[in-house]
Image 1 (tube, rainbow, N blue to C red):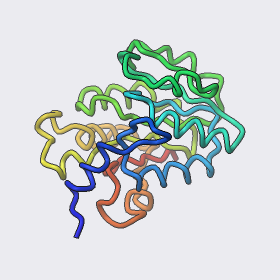
Image 2 (cartoon, rainbow, N blue to C red; image 1 turned 90 degrees about the horizontal axis):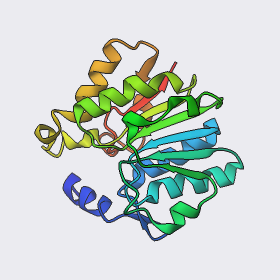
Image 3 (spheres, helix red, strand yellow; image 1 turned 120 degrees about the vertical axis):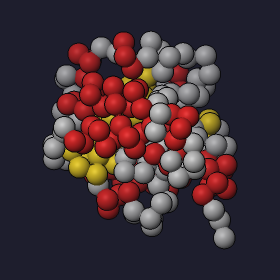
Image 4 (cartoon, rainbow, N blue to C red; image 1 turned 30 degrees about the vertical axis):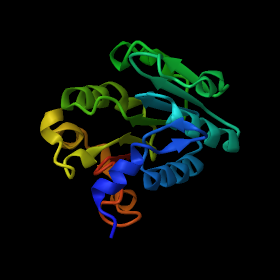
Length: 199
């Protein structure tokens, strides 16, 4: 029987269109459902890495014939050329803290995906900075709460789950979408408690 660590090991090698994206395919399947249901004008992604997930998201937007991906990181050294050349991707390499939120104001339907450092202070800081731009019935997705199940939470100051819990205490306009979190069964998502729906 497959266990969580073997899924994690596979995820760390997972690619899209030849570009490393480090995503659990269960979550990728959920992402495409969210995107087709919401048809966002903007997907803000925190954490580009090689750019495989940005490429996947942008290609989904090609199917809907609408929207752009803003992908933020602290460097663009590892980003694949396919990602750099995609007309629906705009890259920012000065970190989420320095991102100008004024660039988000013109969009009517917004999804935010945080796949950044996973450190508690960064996840909570990004939630506080960007959550107000998520539109009603859309999502702020916090990735990799699974680190707790993998026994790695001490490396991240209890990471995403601690940040989600603290954020929700003061933000009643978001709720954890349990339907999506358990879509393929309990603990199949790597975004544990991370599908935050704006009410």
